Amino acid sequence: MKKMKFNELKNHYNEEVVLEGFVDKIRDLQYVQFVILRDRYGKVQVTLEKDGSMEELNKIVSSLTIESTVKVTGKLLENEKVKMGGMEVIPTQIEVTSESYHELPLNYKDMNSSGIDTRMDLRFLDLRNEKNQLMFQIQSTLQQGMREWLYEQDFTEIHTPKLIGAASESGSDVFEVQYFDTTAYLAQSPQFYKQMAMSSGFEKVFEVAPCFRAENSNTNRHATEFTSFDIECSYIDSFLDVMDLEEDLLIAGLSKVKEKWGDKIQEVFGKEVVVPTKPFPRIKLQDLYQELKNRYHYEIPTEDVGDMNAEAEKLTSRYAMEEYGHEFIFVTDFSAKKRAFYHMRKEGIPQGYDLIWRGCEITTGAQREHRYDVLVEQAKEKGLGKDVEFYLEFFRYGCPPHGGFALGVDRLTMLLLGTATIKETMFLFRGPNRITP
Image (cartoon, rainbow, N blue to C red):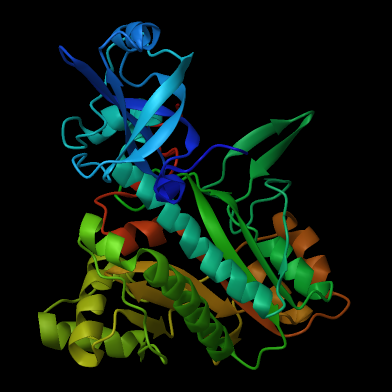
């Protein structure tokens, strides 16, 4: 593409340039016209004198509307008097490539001028906000950093089906889909298929793809469709190897973000990008319960015993900072009743963990049960039968010890930037009460 980025214009003073972008602002004065153009990289001023030399161009600007898109050809001049970058473009040609016909129904430049639901209704306009544009560039960099590290470690990126014949984790919380003359489901996760890749000898795989949860959860951190960053690897000795892998992965992603966007995140979002050090603190669930009780007088409700809840997660982060000065903390030794049937157990204890960051769970990871007979028994214990028969077949003919985890990209971004809700960090949010646009 030949389009010139607005943040690279300083390399082209006294040259003819071609600019394409949105009309951000127009000032039509008695003797001069100013048009501010905007692209994803910045803004630039186009200046037109009203001295008769640009009569046709003056007419175009006089009828121009805010948020129309234009293509401007002209000479780029350095001008210290121009507050916007110390430069301006004197046009020789202006082409209106699309016209904004109506007054905008949303003041996207002021994110506080409308409620979140109005902004979601008009998301195509809301995303024009510079802060939102920056947010998705940061999210992209975070994924890039993690992806690059995985490729360096010789992981293979795979793409698993999202239309499946059986529920990924359980028979509940799945979306049913009419599939010709039978019923299919939208995948809750790629769990079964990334384990199939282990059985197939792939050894190290990852996938970044949508997952679907039919949970009627209306919280600031849940969505019915979200982007999951899934990892699985073979020939591990224990779930501790999985934890080590996740530490390295997060350090790689956050290092990439800090390097490229650290100052900008501090300026725009008021959040410091903290690259964590290894090892992350680790604590057993029962020990954590005791710490929360002793320090904060908090006791886990009966229905949550053996697991965590939102309040416990917030206090766990507080504990990690006070005790270790660390933003991340692994919690281990959950109840088997609260973990999936495919988690390996030793002496009845699931060999897995939750990872807490900034008051929120971001991962459930584990060593998987790879022994066929044990897996069959654990599936029966959970009341799972025909739905997982195809999955159990993966383990009949040999499968190496393996484990893995998943990270929600949207939730990670929310915690990284400190936004109020996950709705803001998703390109298009899906929840119990939102299926459009």
